[in-house]
Length: 72
Image (tube, rainbow, N blue to C red; front, side, top):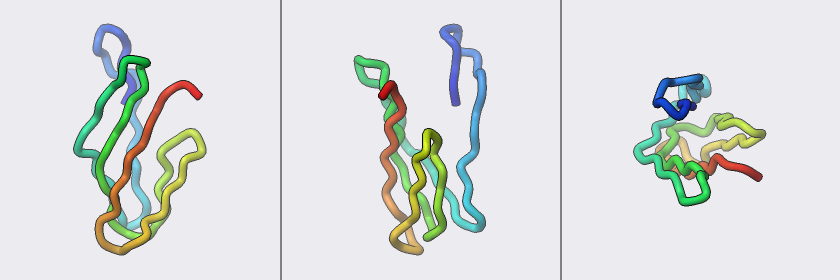
């Protein structure tokens, strides 16, 4: 999700892949404004997290995911 400075949601995107699923349990922002999302995905299918980042699970059970969003 992206919010403006007033806290109003500007957009959101679901991350799904067939019968597999992903879940983020924690979100943090560092002093440079980079956003970190930590969680897991279940299944071996490929998930697209934006900006050309595609992750396929190594196991059919839970796989840890840490995604960083920020300026290159």
